Image 1 (spheres, one colour):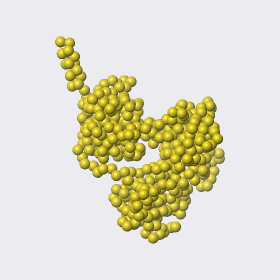
Image 2 (cartoon, rainbow, N blue to C red):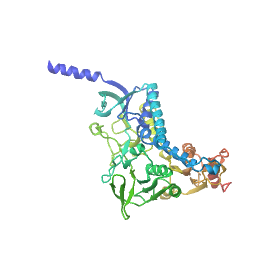
Image 3 (cartoon, helix red, strand yellow):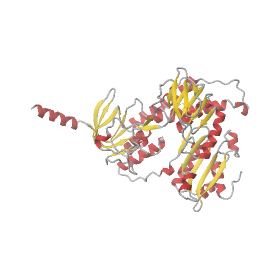
Length: 477
């Protein structure tokens, strides 16, 4: 009788499990988009998030809080040049605590918005860490949760976390990561940024404009290594006016915490002291606790989840998207992948994502944005291409907005005029690139871009003028 009671209890537990058409693990830009899209398509959806707030890295420690601070830095820069526009306001000052408060207010509003969207779409939200008990059953453990749920399909969207160097671990005080620096209570007098990728360069530009003396220490021969070299050269040139020095080909060998400062050691250079060090050496996928090995989900040699063109893993009912893949680790990329995966789960046949139409956006000052191929790749592939380039400086609107730095460069196929790549550096780069996202999707030619009438006066006229270069010459250059 004891065995029979146990068996009946076990069966009862299994039968009482909440069942979902889709369980999404991770509530960042991939997870929340996937969950909402699945609900729109008529699925019963659960969303599992281990942190207190929805939104993942992007909302809580990445895209949104950093861009809020970057916007404040832009305003501070403009305030310090008000006399150029005829204004006199005395000696300007800023309150760092109020700037940080504004950032928190924006993040808080977005968090509330996500909670509302979950309720609106009738998505069950579980706060806890998920792990596979079997291919269809997930255990969820949190401070107030310890239960299991069953899923017909599962979407893995657990994102990434900051990497650490074993010989220079962060301490949350004066050796910080991109997560912890968002809570810093001051603008440091001096800042060493270890890593000249997107995150490191954005923080360098931010704090440099607020007055920090910033040194970027980058191991590779070029900062922003995935961007066009000409664009990066323009950024580095502009950084010199923002209290930022970029040292490439520099190998960090040590960081020593001295209490009130840190001593930074770089191979071949004298040791230097900085008030704060920001470790920004990249990110790594978050897959621990899931027990993927138990259910047979395959990883590649670098630890990313293996998927096909529709984001299906080696286990057919399990899909994976976002930073746990080897695709570009960008919020908008993760969202697009999630939408695609969920539509496939729903039985739709969406077109495969063409990553050459996936834009890159860097929010330094000046901004950098790109799409498609770079010149070195075109040369490697032996593709005959042309270059149509136009600077912002001649434009009236660029002068009006004090945004004359930078240029747009369009790479196009000589024979068919197809746009192969676009690289923009300038104040509006991350907005201007969207025209080329649509253009690439529609297979627009550079001639068609030149024929499109752009409003005057606008910064977007650089696009039309660059296209005119390919037609025989820009009008205003």
